[in-house]
Image (cartoon, rainbow, N blue to C red):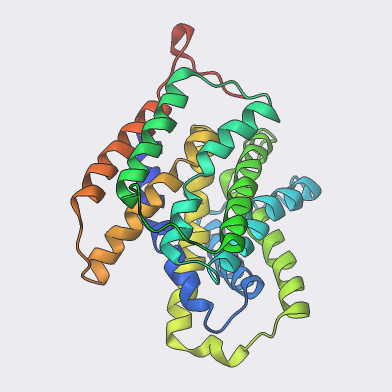
Length: 299
């Protein structure tokens, strides 16, 4: 696996580490579907500018829009909405932790539904990364685990949507589309779908769009988290695998804590540093090649 894939993993985890905070802040003025519309539209404008600057073809006629729309709804619109709704019930930190179960669901669904082949190192890496996540969170017997079940359920369903969507993304890549075209098609379909629901079911406070805080949150969530972020995500799927790409969710709780230490002057405890090391070891093992001739089995 190319070294740039691992660099993309670290960079994307830093970008997505702040997403849960951005969502929490936007929930003060906007509903879940409205946030998805703002996020996807800002990301769409970003990818359009990038494609024009790099002279990348949009491929309107080559994109199969029906499967693209299905993938966008499953992998983007629904999970983004479920995460925003979940954050109305639970803390953003808890949301990022639950989101870290995505790689496990991706491997399981890939094996059961899409007949993807797995290997021992992959499962070992997932297990080690899970242990690292527990170290970061600091879970221990007797700790307070009382949470809102509806919020937790919505976040778990969001991770399952991510797992199915990432597997669909890998197969859509085989159609000859570039990662730019995949990102463009995904965000376009998501913007249309979420906007249709948002404007028909939620009050949309246009005046609040001009607030400086909301502008900053939208830029962070849309331009970086959706525009540049999805380019990195689809690059990892294209050059690596769907399972490896979703390993980013293991690092997001760590980077969320790092941003907290950098911007909010929060203390970085020993369990964060140790857990981060364990998680990186799990990610590395999961991405290792295995089998005859060093070729990794992947659908």
